[in-house]
Image (cartoon, rainbow, N blue to C red; front, side, top):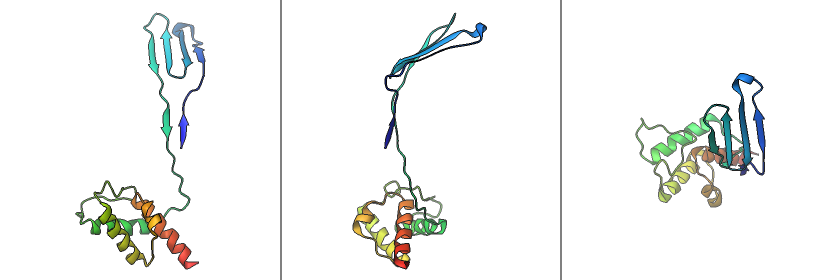
Length: 142
């Protein structure tokens, strides 16, 4: 996880076109102002933003993700009209802890694999499940 923020930065600039003289400055990490000569001053505050990155080296095949989505929809007795994608989260779909255990068992049966409990607990999205399944299948075949 990385944080993006200004730290002790001072920035100022002036317009090079004489008709549109303006001045902007950032004097501290949390405030800035812009003024155009003859116009009202505008000021605003800057807030640090958290940037969350998730890097996944092994992306599951679309067929695997689709099969996982079908199994989850069936286990949760969802209508065919409901849209479920790899980005769908189990919690968002309404799966409680018992549902999650049943889904993992159905996935193990459908793919002929065994998913360890600690690995199963790290699954948040259907894409996570598909990635884990492909990883296990690859290890099993080599």
